[in-house]
Image 1 (spheres, helix red, strand yellow):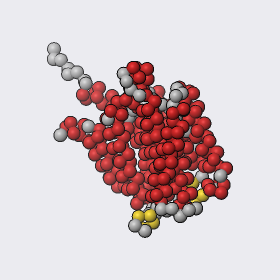
Image 2 (image 1 turned 90 degrees about the vertical axis):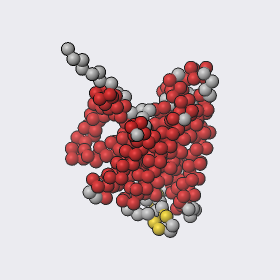
Image 3 (image 1 turned 30 degrees about the vertical axis):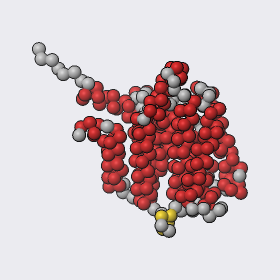
Image 4 (image 1 turned 30 degrees about the horizontal axis):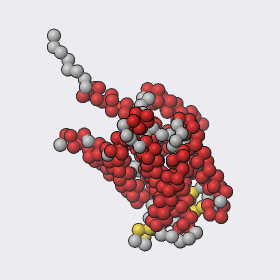
Length: 323
């Protein structure tokens, strides 16, 4: 029983589901539900992005582009062509996966800052397309998105969306944990450790890097589609360069190579600006200072650092010898 609870794929998921289930008791109004929904959508993206950055060691500074492609696929296909929202979401995810596969092989041959610049360029291209294709995307002014429906009933309200997004967060974490525990996950960790050693051991590093790039892009696409239907309106600003940096910061803050850390990082960085609004003109200064302090004193991220401290204090602590 103890081993079952200690297993991230069982006990960890149970704790996450329990937190999502009881959190509404602490949310006094729809504003807080809205923040929770947006944190959940960011968490879905970050769980996928963490597979790429944390486990495979491949940086991406343009992941908001995939988020935007999913959002605009759902928006354009439903608003302009009358598609079923779920069909539009599925086609958008498939299209994003195909695009990620197509650009993944040449881009992922690069390393270090060259890879970062290439992914940044990809995100910028997608952002430019969203700004210039006025007939489809509405350009800089944005466009409205039809609501999501279930059995003909339109889904409105932060509280309903909270449960939808909360369930999908649990599913995304479950998928990521199982992937990490599979042979694919072990291959990704070997790529992160040393590509040369992984290749010598028979690991097809190019294949696994492209695979995780596609998976992380599909996670972002689905979250983008859901966010578009939830918000009912999207603009290119929502999926620009700053959004990409925010996503990477969430992953790093929570702890790279920590699936639950990605969720925690997304929750904190989504909610923290709302908490700091009382500082008014000093809000951004305080926000930056908090991030700096966390990374100085917890360079591995919140969850890995807190986990190490807990093990040191309560598990690995040597018993005091009597004299």
